[in-house]
Image (spheres, rainbow, N blue to C red):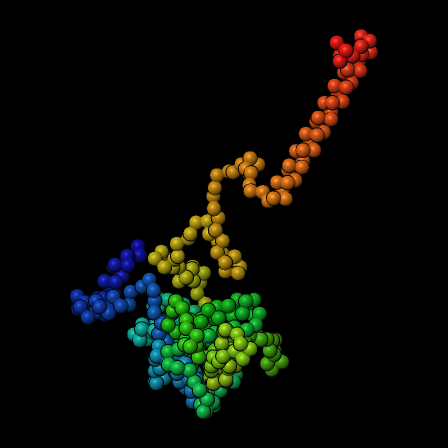
Length: 350
C-alpha cells in the first residue's frame, strides 16, 4: 500500500535529520519544498560530465549568463552517464540538493563530441531528457561591443518551422526549451522590459549523405523598441545579433510515459479558472455571451413606423374602403334591376 503524503513527508524529514525527530529548521525547509499553487521561476542546474572540453564549458557559462539569476553552474566534473539508472539517480540527488527543476549536462568524447543533455524533473524525479549534438556555436564573447540583455529579463521565444508542430519529438523539445528559458512567470508584460528575442528555427538537412534529420538553429537578438517612423502607435523593434547562437541536432530522447506526463500536467483546482456559463471566445479573442429569454410573440407587436409608412397605410385603407363602397353600390343596383324585372316597377316608385 502506497504511503500517504503525510507519511511520505515524515519519512523524508527523518531521512534528512538522520532518523531523529526533525528540527524546526528542517521543517521550515520542507515547507518551502512543498508544491504550491503558483510556482516561481524554475531553478536551472548546469554541470559538466565525465569529460568536458573548453568549448562546452563556454556553452555552460553562456547559459548561466542567459538564465541568470536562476541558474547555478558547478565547476567540477561529474561521473554521470545521464541515460543510465545510476546517472539519473545522481541527477535527481543534485537537482534536489540545489533546488533545481531543469538541468543541462555538457560533455565531450570521441563517440559523441560537443554533447549537451538538457532535461527537467517532476516530484524530484527525472521527467524528460534530450541529448543534443552541437554542430556550430558562437558565444557571447564573439559579439564584443554589442548590447546584451539585462539580468533577469524575460526573452521572447519564437519557434519557426512546420517541424515544431508535425514532429512529436520536436513538440516535446519545444516545451522543454520553454521551461529552460522562460524565467519568472508573470501575469502581464511591459514593453520597456522586453530586450531580447530567442529564435529557434527547425529545418531538415542531410549531414554526411545520411537520411535528412532536423537541425535547429538558435539565434539570439538584442531588441530595442523605437518610435514608428510611419506614425503608428505601437513601437517598432530593431534587432541586433547579440549571441549566444548555436546549431544543434537531436541525438537521443527519453520522454516521460503517458501516465507520468498526465500527472505532471495536472493542475490543482485552485489554479484553474472557473468556467463562466453562457460565455465563449471566438478565434479573434472576442467574448460572446448568450442570453436565455422567454419566447416572444413578435407578430402581435407593433413598432414605431415612419411617416412614409403611415401615409402608405392610410392610402391602402382609403383604397380598400372605396373598393368596398363600389362593390356594395353595384350589388344594390343589380338588386334594383332584378326587382323591376320581376314586378314591373322599381323600389323608388313605391
